[in-house]
Image 1 (cartoon, rainbow, N blue to C red):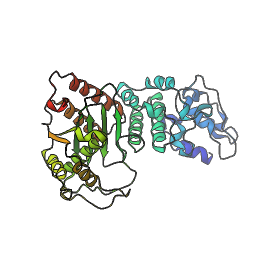
Image 2 (image 1 turned 90 degrees about the horizontal axis):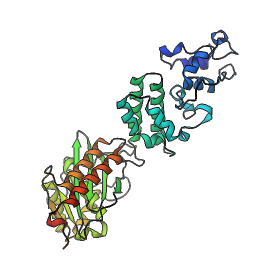
Image 3 (image 1 turned 180 degrees about the vertical axis):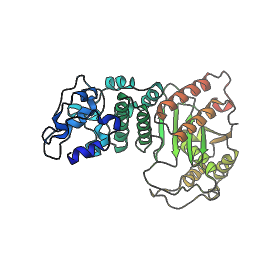
Image 4 (image 1 turned 60 degrees about the vertical axis):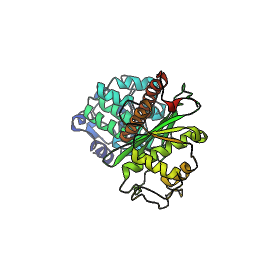
Length: 370
C-alpha cells in the first residue's frame, strides 16, 4: 500500500474503510477494483481524487452521481489541503443557498447552533480564526451527511470556539459596540451599565437611551496570556470598566447625562473621583503600564469623571424591572457567555428594552428634558 494512501486511511473511521476500493490504479492498491461505492459519498470521493499517490500517479477522478453542496472532508485528514473543495472551489465561494440546504442535514438542535454561525460559514474574511470557524462549520455538514451527528456536534463546538476571537466579536480587546436605530432619545441621555461574573470569566455591558450599546468579554481574548490587573476586587473593577464604556459612549453629551448602576460600591468610587480624589482605586487593582502603553482603564475613568461634575451618577435596584438596567445586565450576561451569535442576541435585547423604556407613560425624572 502506498505511504500516502496509508496516511489518509489512518484518519478514516473504520466504518468508512469499506468505501475505499481501488484508489490508485497505477500502484495496484486494492487490485484495481472499481470505486463506484465512493459515489455515495461525493465529498469523500473528491478528497481521494484530489490527492496524489506516493507512486506519482494521481488518484482517478470519478464523476459524482449528484452535485455536492458539502465542504471538503479531506481537510480533516490533510490540514495542508484545507479549503479545497469539489472542482477546485474554495470555502469562501460557498453560496447562501448551499448553506441553507446543508442545514437540513443536521438535527434540529445542531441546525440551530449552525444557524448562529452563518456569518462565519459564508465569510470572505482573511482572518485565520474566521476561516477556521468556517472550515469547522462545513466539516460539520460533511459529518452529518454520512450520519455522524456526534462528530458534527464536536465540529460545531470547534467552530463556536474559533468564533470567540478578537476579530469582530465581543471577545475582542475592544468591545462590541453598535447602535439600534429608531431611538433618538432625549436632550439629556440616560445610560446604564452592568457587569456579570461566573468563575474566572466575566462580561461588561452598557446601553444608552438613544440606542447605543456595547459589551465586552473579560478577560479579553487577545491571543496572548496576559495577567488580569483586576486584583482582589474583580467584580467591582468589572462594574467600573462597564461604566467606563458607557461614559465613553456618551461622549460630549456626558456632562448633561445620567449614568445608572446597580452597584452602590462602584457608585461610591465614581462619586469620589467626581470630587477630585482620582488616586483612590479598588483594592489590588494594578497600576502597571498596559501592553498598549495606555493608562489603566480605571485611571482614565477617574480623570474623565473628575471633569464631569454635572454627570448624574444614580443607583438603580438590580433585577427590579428597570428597562435600561435589565438591558445592561442582559448584555453583560451575553458578553460573559460569549456565544457565536452574540451580536444578533444583543440587538434583540436592546430593541426590546429600549421600546419598553420609551413607551413608559411616566418616565423617571432622569429621562425627562430639563
